[in-house]
Length: 446
Picture 1 (tube, rainbow, N blue to C red):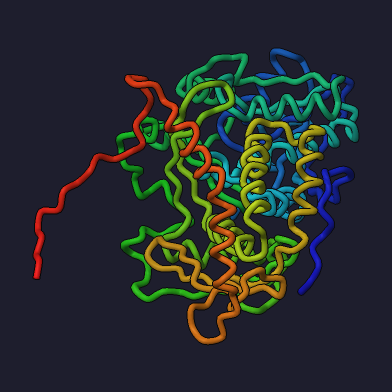
Picture 2 (tube, rainbow, N blue to C red):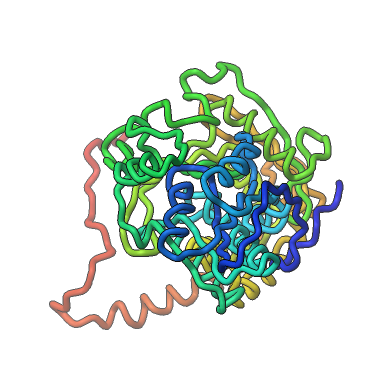
């Protein structure tokens, strides 16, 4: 199997930058995390008006099917003094996605954290770009009631406390309709209408969809919100079998062929999505204290988490596996709550790297009509011993040893019953654990 880059908290980030037109001025500069959508396009003009700053538009490619090159041109046309794209897909996969997979990080046992994992990387690149461009501030398009504002603000000020943070949506309090009118008045090109009310975030690890009719948790999500996954009813009737090979808890092969992280995830997104796998409908507890209804599409993530967990079950002892589950919960909370650049993360990461040393092997899965089923697993480091587990010939388990084991294991309970349970006072009220006697109803005697 091939080797993945060594896991570590991200430091110097290898990036590929595409830049747009540049105009020199003497104004202070702000680096804006720019998506090309309504809110961040309006933010360019709004920041110029309110703060009298030059806006550098920074678009981060974490894996999307959308062509981002027109976004560079749009930012400059909208008023940015400079616009650029950073291709950070590989960094995202190896420094954020795969460490989270190793950790088993599913927020509230449901959400693969696609958006949450992308935010600390975007924050790091905002800070790096601000330093490179001599900017005194960074800006993002988060609202005042979402999770992302927390993630961005904490990460940015952890990495560089001197930077000013501007959050136009948190400050201007414009409705979506008012933002569209502002764009029209300022001749800002937008591709949006009130007929498409969804807020969507997308990267290689998953899509997040919210707002609109989805805010009613009783309403079934309409099919038109999904992009990567087929309806299970429309998926093939015959199952698709796949095999995923892991080393140190990182997926390296698909059906016996080595794959780079990006290619492996993209292939799994297609294979699993075509089989109707990857949809998550989740009532989520946000950082800011409210519950929200979130829809996610994460085909590759769902399959990889399922396979990874199955492999852990065969190579870990009971105590190790159960403790790892506790660590997974803390890790997912840490990511979700925006604490990526914390020493707590470093402590958790140290344990996970040690814990994943023996997560080596292959898992076979059956994909059918929206279901991902583990049907096989093997590992050169497996703790499963057939000669101990079998009830057939070749059984090497020492059955006679069970008698002594049961006596010793049950001794505390037997002793307590003889001493304490008999000492209960008459009429003392305690929870009853003793079922009543049940008389037989059909007795036959010879």
